[in-house]
Length: 278
Image (cartoon, rainbow, N blue to C red; front, side):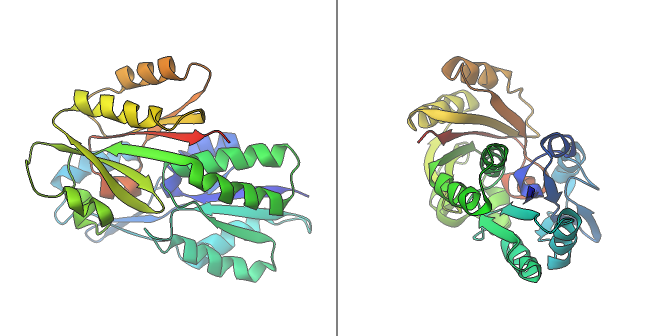
């Protein structure tokens, strides 16, 4: 019996990372005008961010149809004892989870779908921890219970260059409170419970980095830590070094926000995250 892991492209696992981990990624769609691309398949982050500044209108996203999930599950469930845990983007941000649920109904309880209640590196925390549970020989029920318990221990903090993309994409939620005021400030958000919660405004990147690290440090003891950027002009090496200094015992999970997440974050975003220890 094998328990397989499926996620979606808002996890921001690159094809290389997914292959290394043995995880199946179902892509969402990104549409520039009349052109539609599979996230991470037909368009990568570098191409997306090069096109984004000149895009009129801004690109839009759409969830995978249930048939995409059904095809992925079918490929994995080759032996009678095989099972799937399918971990996805928060249901508050997308219909992706609903598509996965609809597809799972055709597999007689062999597929369990989990709402991560988060996105990007937050999903990766759950995926990687789930892989460790599978390697430890846990059964599907235990694996799912653990994933659902871990959701509340995920802390993701993001500094955006602007709220424009989040607002125009219709995902601004509670961060609406940060609109207006001084235009030169950068908003800091906490992603939790499937929503973007306002945390602070800062005037420059240096202040923002300090505040991000302060917020993450306030989460206490972490068992995983992450750094994400989105087409940022400024290198993240300084932030990476400070995270290594603060958490020398942890492997840093670093990457770039992919095209679908980038539609809402925009270029120049910087995020840090952690999975709190029990």
